[in-house]
Amino acid sequence: MRLETEALGVRFQNPFFLAAGTCGFGLELAEVLDIEALGGFVTKSVTLEPRVGNAPPRVAEFKGGMLNSIGLANPGLERTKREKLPWIRDNICRPRVLVSIAGHTVVEFFTLVEGLDSEDGFLGFEINLSCPNDAERTGEPFALNPSAVAEIISGCRIRTERPIVAKLAPNDPDLSRTVQVATEEGANALTLVNTLPRALLDISNGVPELGAGGGGISGPALRPSGLRAVREARGATHLPLFGAGGVMTATTAVEYARAGASLVQMGTASFAWPRAITEAIAGLVQWGQEQRISAWDDLVSRPPGANAPANRLDLFDPIESSREG
Ligand SMILES: Cc1cc2nc3c(=O)[nH]c(=O)nc-3n(C[C@H](O)[C@H](O)[C@H](O)COP(=O)(O)O)c2cc1C
Image 1 (tube, rainbow, N blue to C red):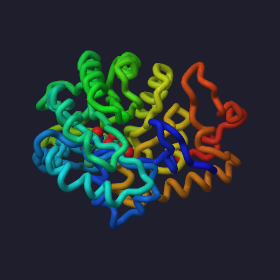
Image 2: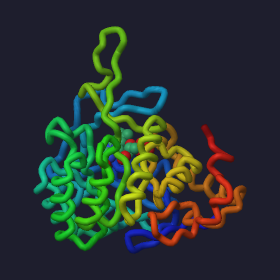
Image 3: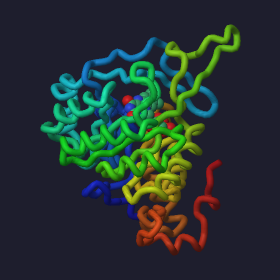
Image 4: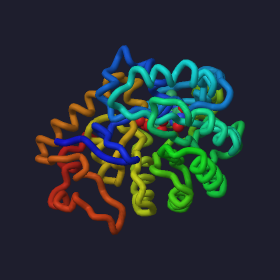
């Protein structure tokens, strides 16, 4: 099965990315994982100033996945330029890298793009419009406010020629509209979804398990939200989509392809098992052989009206026949 796919003006060797905030800046995982095997990765979201993040505990596990309130702990713009991007430039060959940025204000996004754009070694920006952990400082996530989305995407667009990917929220009541706004203002792709704001409590005293109170759900419990968002977005834009939320295995990635994502991002799975992503890549090749599917691209649902090379797959449903539960 051919895993290559094209988007953002480049060819990706396979559709698997590690998601923002789950692989640092790449070097953190280099010892435990063959990074060169990945389609790409998204860096931790970078803010203008360094951030230490929220009060501990910042992660809690539950049966359906995990809840985190990391709070965008990151080295900030200057240290990212000085210490993180040079490593990526010198060490990453085949995977494509997106640098994630997060502003507390609209103008901070622009300063981040301007500050990073002249650096080498990365393909483009993922604009984190949807961090639920940051809502304390900024009010609601920008992703839930279409005029803020328009302002941020259009302002980033005029400041860089690199691809920009808008990362949206799973709890957007009018996602189609947000998707259209991001498309019209010049985003080159979308990532759906970020974590979903929720809470877990200690039953002995009712105190939240996370130091920050609430946090964002990720992992298997997020998958239906991610799939729904990707399906909805697929109907509202022609842009390539990154599917994220509970991508744990090859077949969960295929499920996202069927929803309309031509690339996927994995986060929580790699906390449980750092090599989950390389195993999923190998698993996809094997699954494709078993199902007699020759190319990943054939699995990807196209936007309405687009030429769909996947028509022949309508003859059977490989997901149903091999669903992992
Ligand atoms: C510990 C942790 C930190 C994260 N940090 C970021 C971040 O800095 N920026 C961002 O856009 N998303 C961040 N995310 C969200 C992930 O990129 C991803 O959208 C989400 O976890 C869903 O994928 P998953 O279910 O495979 O984990 C974080 C997720 C986790 C679990």
